[in-house]
Image (cartoon, rainbow, N blue to C red):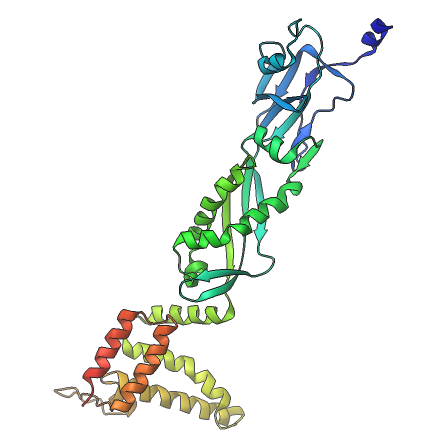
Length: 349
């Protein structure tokens, strides 16, 4: 009867896995009640790793190639079994295949705004998203920590864990990048590099190798976006005071046009435009030499000495307060503020 049972047994002589491209990361070879024949053939293709597990212990790991399973190719398994017949009889062992190819275009993002601490603005809220790619770097570690004894483990099963790691490390990445919060949107590559530096060791703890990560968009809060727009505008005009006042006038004109005198249509537009131009002329006269004559319609005839604008102490204090507000908001640097302050004080009579 024992002989008949032995004859009825099925033996495996070829072990291999042909991936289907469905995002499978780990796949257990179907054993059922079958045993692996001594001298069986193991085929591990490029972008694959095979792991033999015996009684819950990882026995051997095979990289790409074709192997004949004998005592020479399975020395660890032979030691665990401690067979007297030196592997002459069939044996049973779970065989897991792992895909090591790169899993590309994996999405990450902040479902809700996350709170970030910034040295300039305190606590601010941020939204960001991008993509990343990864591969299995340590199949043995991935098996013991993540996939375990499951028949199939896919990219979708791992997606939530990896996204959580990305979101968990965003704050540290921003802090280590050295990029000011207002400049994050314009320095996405540097932000991504800092995020990758934070994530590589975290992914490695579960046997995953991070290949690349991108930051495709950073959304700033509306109030900070306005400050960023003002800083960009100042960068376009440089440190020239006349151009600065022209820029401020251009920003103020629409607001005056909206609320000037309650007028409507062409009349209201004209009143608003006139008020905006008048404001620009007054401010430019207080802060820039020579612009006062142009605003007042002075004749084009050249003079031997340009007139020096006279500014009252009250106007100087008002202007300094406005410049101080711009410095507080980060539109003007301390150096720019000091230079403009010195220029104003020189005009006092």
